[in-house]
Length: 310
Image (tube, rainbow, N blue to C red):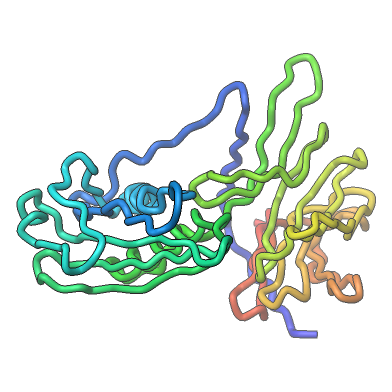
């Protein structure tokens, strides 16, 4: 077993609950003082019928949501090229556009989608990025997010996160009765939500496995907190702990083989480590104070946690 070093950090934790009766919507209306003007031209559809997804609009929305870009409205575009030969830089300089993204989408066979894209620097009059994404037609939005990631990294030097997914808990308030909790998985923009678990008891502390194939969370469905591991593909889940007292804050190790957690089965909240292959528990901290919220360092050799030791 790897040697673990416990490090204390002061942490400020913000707790937010999403209520169906009072939904919190945060709209980003401004990012940089001078966001980059980019035109995401509607991608040419080269398949039969209508396109399964407006991939250009997904990309446009991603870049706008980052606050780093100011996408050109489609109504302001003087042209809608889909190939390099159709790109005339004067059309884009006329509307003060710095970059132009064009593309083509098609379906090969019946279920495989291909998105080809090219990014042009208007001032340099040069193509600065080209590539393609392929995948199942049902994953058209995710393919578009991947294109947005490539564009974002090319222009900012920072890897994009549009092709990631969100895991969150929402609650429907029920005055006079029990609230209703949902554990939901969605795209980074909130699209394609999938409810993974519904319960009349609280759900909290969702955590991703490093490979993105499993999640862990705390559920009170047995009338006390218990830690569960769930496979996303099948929905199969396993209860990892259900000790008396606190079972909380599951945190996967970088290699996915271990999980740090907080247990108070011996009377005081301490940090424990579980080997997920054997379910063997190792106690990492022993102190009369409250130790909680373990977080792994990237190398998997150290853990940060919050404590009121003072």
